Image: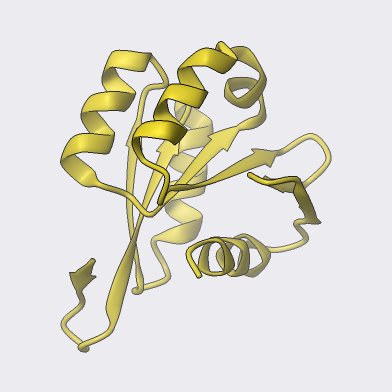
Length: 122
């Protein structure tokens, strides 16, 4: 984990989407939280593996299209290789967060997403 100048531990969050508006929107919302270090990556498997190895995120946010569009075998490979990573699927159509392991929460404001990130890393 990185250390912020205030001495707080930062949490590394990787945003995966082929949609630049999704990437930019989520990054801009989360950058206001100094305890989060945010990066984005295209969802192509090779790019994802490179991002995971170099950035070593604790939380990965997927947009709903990527969550359903990627072959399950690819995501299972990632989860087996990096079991400590928590996956959050963000669905902008119904404002929900699907947390890997079957939990779903409603998102009414950016703080709901931040609480899900912080809770997923616990």
